[in-house]
Length: 278
Image (cartoon, rainbow, N blue to C red; front, side, top):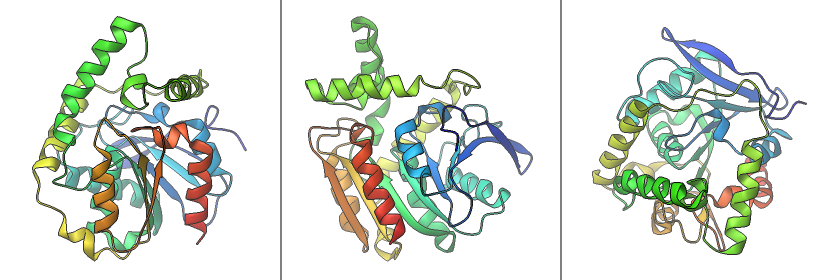
């Protein structure tokens, strides 16, 4: 089975708009759809996570509307992003899916589960937060500060956004970034400024939104994970998310931040597969 550095980028027509996606893993069973973070495209998924999950699952990665190589303009609300994700799933002819939403993608996954509960079997929510929790509205300022610091110190912004400044955290960042560079051909299109602006608008609205009472009615089994010191969106939001969901399991990784699932990719994959097998 080819790893993520080798699988082809495909496109599917979603109501007249091409959506770019990649898939790997064995066919059959309930597919696992991955929804990624603010500013991310397909190449930003950690191959160690994707290939680890694909050892047992049919894994599908997607650029939603306006992101990366997908057509159209990125909407500035998570309701519209969720509708696009559902339309993509339906365009592939899938009736039931599991979801792994990371960061912004975790918000999209929450909205999908609330609005289309019959489509989703299980959800994994990583480094994300419920509506009304602190953090998302400051994402633009956090990104800008990280890019400025990275430029001055000759590092990648993800050194500061996803990982702790400890030796272990920075070593994990170096390893993660090397894995992202493994794919050398058929790379995705970088995210546009217009897409980032739309995503930041949606994140500001999410923080200003009311506490999501709908989450308390979700019966889907959920695995909620994060690092113990998420400086992008405070880990307290992750804890609140796990408290709100009635059927949630929680995993918090030590000495790690927003990119905890990449720093502890072997442990995360093990926990995720055990959860999805149940």
